[in-house]
Image 1: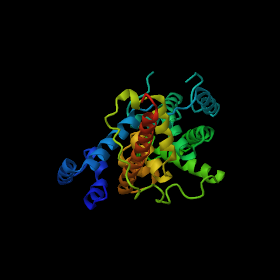
Image 2 (image 1 turned 180 degrees about the vertical axis):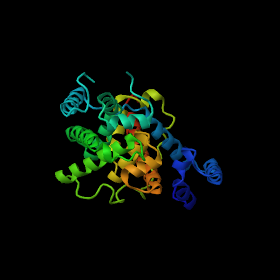
Image 3 (image 1 turned 60 degrees about the horizontal axis):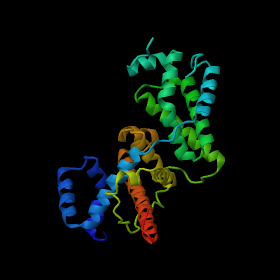
Image 4 (image 1 turned 45 degrees about the vertical axis):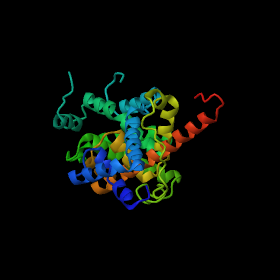
Length: 84
Length: 205
C-alpha cells in the first residue's frame, strides 16, 4: 500500500465505487487490483463500510422531543391542533 | 384533504402558512435535521433545540425562500447555521467546523484486516452498530458534516455543497476521506475483535 500507484489510486476509489469514475480510471483500478492484494482489501472493506453504514439504524428524535417541538409549533400557529 | 406532492404547490401552501402543509414538512424533515444537528453538536438536547429553532425560523421567514433549492436543502442549511451558532455559544469547539482539514489520520498506514467477507450476523449486531455511530461521531468535523448529508441523508453532491457553502469538488473529497476514515476505524475494531477472540482458549466468539 505504500507504493506510488496504490496512493494514486486511493483517491479515486469513492468515485470508482459510486460508478462515477471515468472509464480509463476504472480500467486502471481494475488492472491494479488484479495484482495488488492490499488494495483489493481496501476496496472490499471500503465497500463493506459503506454498506454497513446504510444498514445501521439511524438516530431519531425521541417521542418526548417530538411532542415538545410539535407543541411549540402549535402555539406559534404553524401546525394544526391535532396530534402528529 | 391530502397535501399536494408538487414541490411548487407545497411551497405556495407553506407561504400561506397552511397548517397541513407545515405539518407535513415538519414530519418529513425533523429526523434528518436532528441527525445533522446531532453530528455537529454531539448533544441530543442541543440537537432537539436546533430542530425546533430551525422550523420556527423557516416558517417565520418562508417569504425569503426563493425556491431555487428544495425545501429540504433550505431547511438543512438553516439547521446547519443554527447548530454552528449554538456550537460557538457553548465554546465546545473553538475552530470553525469547515475550517481545519487536518487531523483525519491521512498518511497513517492503512489497516488491512479484511472484514469484507465476515457473515452478516457478525457485522450487523448492536455492538457493531454502536461502533459505527460512535465512529461517525468521532470523525473530524469537516468530514463528519459532509458524510452525514451525503452518505446518511442521501443529499446529492450539489445539495450538500449548497447546504455547507462548499464547492462540489470539496464535497467529493471530504466524502471520500470520511469513508476512508470510517473504514480505518472499523478495520481496527474488527481486527481487535478477531485478536481477542483468538486469545480465548476455545477460540469462541
